[in-house]
Image (tube, rainbow, N blue to C red; front, side, top):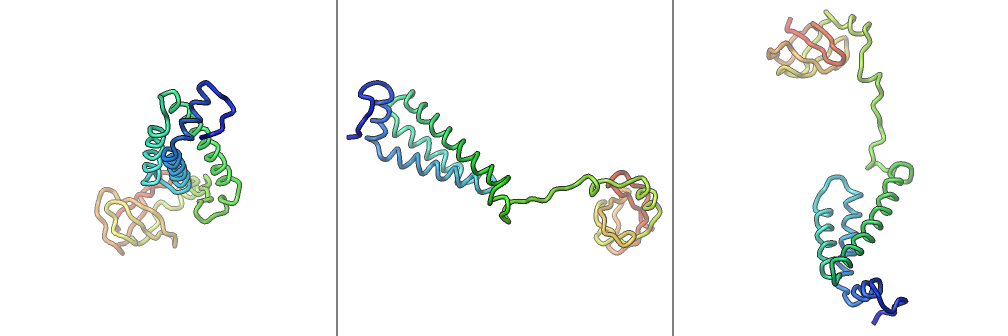
Length: 176
């Protein structure tokens, strides 16, 4: 049915086994497509699980022995690794990296720290709680919205607060 280059041996039997079983080939192809789709969408969901199940079912149906199934699995994993490398390279440098699906922003160190001068300036300043502080929330201090925490007390929205201490990005306030 399938012209073989090798007339005997493992590879001939392996190729003949797949040639005689179109159902196994269809399941393996569907499984690989679903796994590639899973590589393109975030999370581990229905496409990845369904693809894994289809691959396993295709290997069970299409392989006549355990060594043949393992050899087929090795080929499938190698193909998926090459496809994954192409997708991830595209996500980093290619057209996919310019897609609105990919987040390209980064947080720099300057936006997550305060200098000693800024810290000294904030202490003693007053502002208004934009949200209720339970004990954390948002307040406007010196015209800037910032995440703050109260000293283990509930502070109502729109209450006046005063900065007690600053530790890095943590601003501790009390009710005035």
